[in-house]
Image (tube, rainbow, N blue to C red; front, side):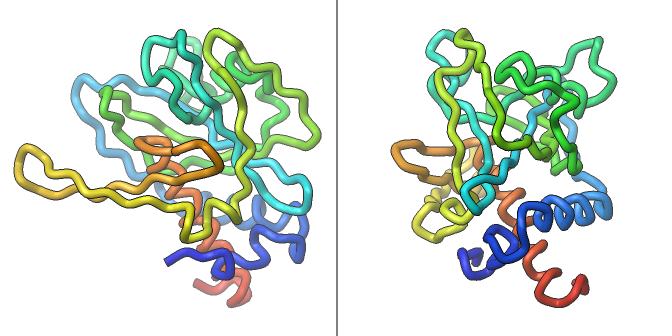
Amino acid sequence: MRTPDAVGDAVGDATGPRALPDALRAILAGRQPVVEPRDGATPAGVLVPLQYHDGRWHVILNVRSETVREHRGEIAFPGGRLERSDADMTACALRETWEEMGVRPEHVDVLGPLDAVLTRTNYLVWPTVGVVPHPYTFTPAAREVASIIEAPLDELLAPAAARHEARLAPDGTVHERVAYVYGEHMIFGATAWILTQLLDLVGEASRRADTGGQT
């Protein structure tokens, strides 16, 4: 189980603002993202933006507007479907983040990809982790983004932030799902699954730090 103590210095002051991204970059470089393609699924890319300020790391999320076609009012990472002009899924995520939040692609320090996830609306989402400098002036597109959330990683890692549910699939199997509470917001669905990957990697980064880089 992940706890704030389990990640320790990886998200706190003791190792400074560069320790976590350096550790995540090394971990992501040494793994092959898992992808389970499905016929007819629409490929999409999202950025998982991290930012360091006030002595701790934050993950940046959007509250989707009430005017978008899908997932109105939900918490999401910036992103969208792959376009022909995108060189790859990371380029897609960076372009969408520029369009939604006004973050220029060249300002993002890309750390690497997470495993792809399939949404209930049949999007195959490829997440890319990246660091946004601080301070940074976000300029959200009002048509798509209602507000921006900067959630501290240590608060999301706290046991009280997690919510668990089980759903019975049509074939009789039980699927366990996790969601997260931050303030008045509930982070659920594919966004929560991607967030879980990130939090697991933060825990791994901490364990590597505790063992001098050994796994």
